[in-house]
Amino acid sequence: MFPFLAAAGCIGDETLRAYGGKGQVWALQEIDETTVSASTTLSFDRRSSVSGVLPCNQLVAQLRSPYPWFELEQLATTRRVCPALAEETTILEALQQMQVVEIKGRVMILSNDAGREMVFTAAD
Image (cartoon, rainbow, N blue to C red; front, side, top):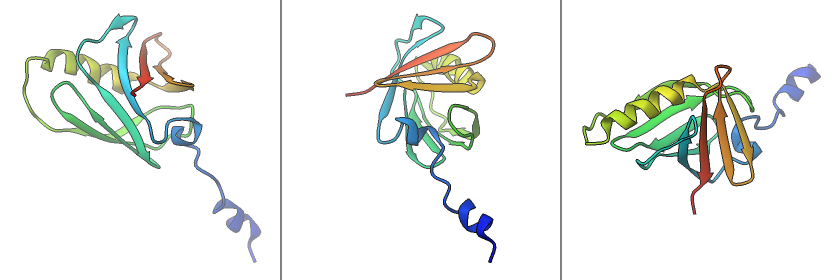
């Protein structure tokens, strides 16, 4: 009766999962051309869900923007303290400032209008 409503239900996955992010663990390599020494990973396993492992804690968030936009919502972390907590804080602050995501094969780049950039590679 309302064909436009039926068509709306057929819209595919427009998250970064559909553009190469699905089923991959992304390891952070650098922030603003500076190598990151502490291990940090992100995964996009469910349609709008982001999970990750930070140097000290675990992360969960929602990513509702369609690809190539990147905006984390409802970000939460565990609250452990470790020697790498200062680096973790830097990583979290940068992650929350990112606006665009681009996936090129085994490289994922997050960036923003201010020229900041986070480079991830597909973990083996």
